[in-house]
Length: 560
Image (tube, rainbow, N blue to C red):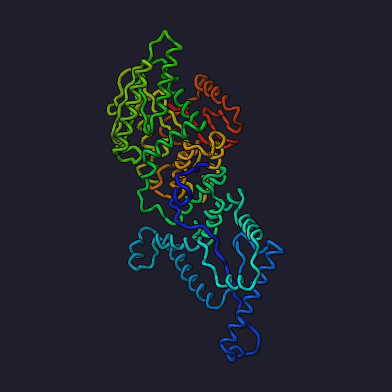
């Protein structure tokens, strides 16, 4: 089956540089008894023979125990413990000491304020990202075979092929956590990272990697997705890259549009926004829609079709003219007019022109490249007599608020929109808090939210679908940014509806209940999903919620 992400393993699609494996925890007890100073009187050859004898007994005891019981395997220690020779213990202790020092140094570095960075660099004591990545590699990689295994093969009968296969299967089964365990282990790992307990986090990451499968069921895919985000959080592996490079790429925008097309929760939310715009402007011969994140323009292709359909149903009225203004703020990474963004907008304009010609509609497409703080009716090209609508479909969550900038661009934009006097302001957002929540709470919410979303995608698309693979790669980028980034580096900051309602109210906007012209068509479209049980539709307090198994994923609302 095709993977949910590009590439054939986690490292290929996530930049997960660690290698799979389980750490072997070896214990050594010092020799006691035999009289004081007796050890010093024996020859070196006698000591070596005694050590080999003890080593053989230890191996034999563990072998017998593994054949009679499975108690030799546990979560933290997936492989049987074997007593190593003294020389190996000394070397192991040295490596452990170095690794512990690296972990302590990293913890100290992560807990330092930004103001202390120069001081740390001057002392040269802080570990680098590459050093921590190497430490993670050591913790997750299987250690080289100990000499005790050679002694075991030489002194014990070789296991039969069937025995080896059975032992391997049993070991894998005991080491790979099940779905419920994986969810809990993800949360525990996030808590360990938040507390600076990187030794526990690294051990958990090794177990989670065995449970992750980007081509498996939704839980396995979720584990892979969240695992990659945790590694990025712990190691800062994506710190060297531009924080918005992938989230603002053309591929990401294309995959996002695919998600809108595949997922009923997103598609129905956008449909509700379009219907609310048409309902609020139904008596106007001229409609002007201002959009702050047009994406691939899929929502407006649907809006143009809806305008044409309404004109066919009411032939006595001439079809209205439609003007679409895409705002491109040069200070916002996701809308700035880079070459790729410019080409994308030109492509959207061309598609809209061809579609409107084919449907016989008068549609204009404009691009306004101005800062949000510079926007007014003149800059936006608002004309006398036209009905203005402002559309925020998954756009407000990408604009910084007071937790990122004292200027609070999010609320400032809402106040400017209110001053334009629009007939309607439509908002469609994900129902999840990735804004002000601390890392552990944000991670837990991400697990629940994306777990439900992946379950819903599994009901709508085959696991070997190439489009689904691109969509889930898109989701992987989103969750990694939401979990691994802080401050201005976190691009998407969605909030739950209650917080949006408070923001809209403070900006002077009041909720507008969806009328039958909006609700009934949405209900009819939702009814076509009866063959796919699990999707939910909820109308409450003037807003429409769309979700999976009771978990609301998107909410559409209208304001004025």
